[in-house]
Structure formats: C-alpha cells, structure tokens
Image (tube, rainbow, N blue to C red; front, side):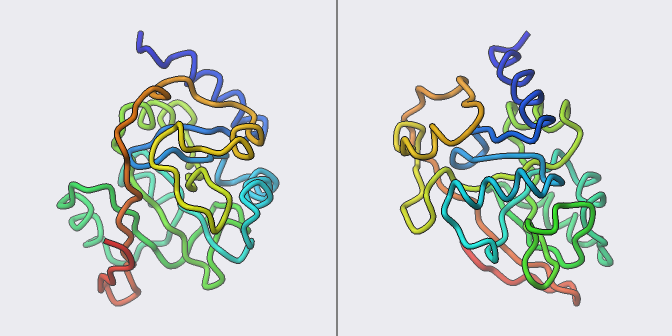
Length: 190
C-alpha cells in the first residue's frame, strides 16, 4: 500500500465523473481532468480564466499511450523521449481521441510522459490521458509549490490531492519541444 492510495482512488472517481483535480506532477502542481471530456476541459478554462484558444498539456503513462492520442508518422520521437531526463513536453501534430477544446488550432497536442510515481499510478489506474495545466489563474505566475496556489484555484476544483502538499522545494515547469511533420525538433521552452 502506498501513502497515496486513497488519493488515487478518489481522483479516479472524480475524473470519471467529469470533475477537476489538483494534483502533484513531475513538475509543478497541476489542475487535471479527463483529457477526452470536453465539458471538464471547459471547466478548467473557466477556472483559469484562460482563453480557450490556448491548448493545454496532457499527461500519459508511457510511449505506447502516445499512440492512442496522435498519429505519429516518425517513430524517432520515441528515441528522443527516451534520451531526455528533464520533464519534457512534446507537441505532436495530428491529435486524436481527445477533447476538441483541448487541442491547438492546428490540431496539435502537447503530451508529456510523466515519470512521477504518483502520476504513473494515477495514469495507470485511470487508463486514459489526464490534462495537466499549471495551478494558476491565467496571466498570474505559475505556483512553484503547493502553498503558492491561490484560493481561487483550490476552491474551484472538486478534489485536492493530500500527498506532497507539505513539500516546499520549488518546482519548475517542463521543457517544451515541438516535433514537426518532417521529424525536426523545435525548442519552445528550455
């Protein structure tokens, strides 16, 4: 039994009901929902007061999971992913099986394989991609630890994970790269 089993079970229940969770990731705390549920994704945009034209990141369990959500023409991206150690989000063209309001206007989606143990367990048991967007109101700074998250956010979600709330180490957002149709990598954020 892990110290977060109750959190995992409650998160799955909330996600299956179309609810929002506030949870620790391999980077900063994230607001999450079922990445295939348009209504839930819409709730995140409302909570963050964010323009729905801005796409959000999706977390998946492993490389195989990516294939459920994008039509990957060039499998070299998987060699790239295995070679990186810093949490890195990859923007892929040709998204599929996700809420349409989650995608960028060009049909792309930002996906990160989350190697954090809590998230791995959550993703494995939920069996689907989960949205992960920073736990802040749009245009405000990204909270780098749980204590920096505003009341607007904590009161706007359906469940707050208890695990790791007491950590004070400042976390950083992931690096972001784009994998284009020609197999080129474009660095968006280090």
